[in-house]
Length: 395
Image (cartoon, rainbow, N blue to C red; front, top):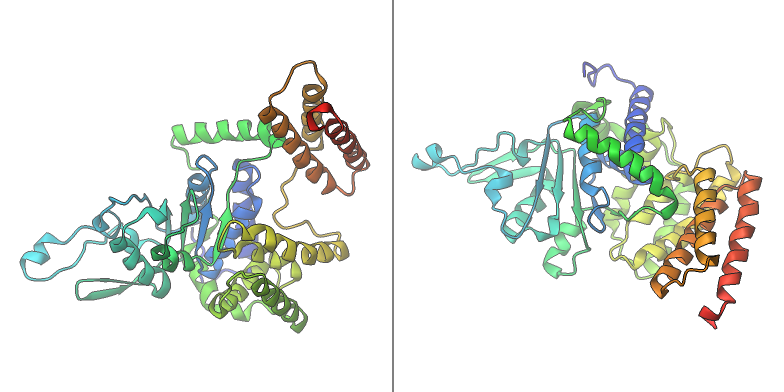
């Protein structure tokens, strides 16, 4: 891109970043909140880890993000057998023969601006120890040389949260932790359509998205975000109350992370082109958990605050809300009703799967508060659930 840090405006950058987010949303159904977090993490210079089962687009979504940011990108799948020279660069043999130890870091992780490491918690100690300094201090030491790295953000993925104490240090470096799960059943048709389109693009080696911002622009924002976004005393008071409520529930949230979160809130506002933070930006607190069990607790704390804000600002679209087709929901409801009331005998696993799908559909319908049809169908779902629970299967 020809845009330079000296010429871009905040509003123009926000518009372009939103365009980049829309590009990704067209490819990855139901990942709106994750996509937003990718962009604001990069704006804030913070790191994010995605945790979820295989096949939930964790790798694909970061690679697509890297394609819309004009930045040097490095990605690698880590195992316990991965050697440091695979990601940090091989030893410079010529220099070694002359008595100097250093690595050839050209086009390797120390020169990258956006990094993605898959299965990061499977890396060995040699790699993890080097990563700690790199992501925290933006420095890489090899031999007697220490270089400043141009890292904007490091994104990582894992199938599970680390339980080994030896991994707690690297896990702590990821301010944001995001669950990446399978899509709800009523998104299945859209999943197939978008998935096929993405597969075709990848097989044809096509560029998935247009470049919307440069690494230099993101680094400029990181250095000067405080002059662009304001935080009211009212917001800070709300945030303080939520922090102490989170801590009272036994969820560790250090002062260091609390300060860093202010930076992420500010860049969430900046992503929208706003010059002030609102309570809507507090959705980020859903992603500060340390264990999967804490996700539900955080939702119970954050959810009511967000609900109150959106109720008083009905003209604002909810951050991270997945656009859902009412027609898709009704069609899925029809299929489930026929399955549950038909003559076919269902196994316990099939039965509970359909009941879970009904719960997903009801939650999606409840979010469509402005649709009389959706609200009427909530009653239909409740009747179907009552019928099933009154049947002999639950006697």
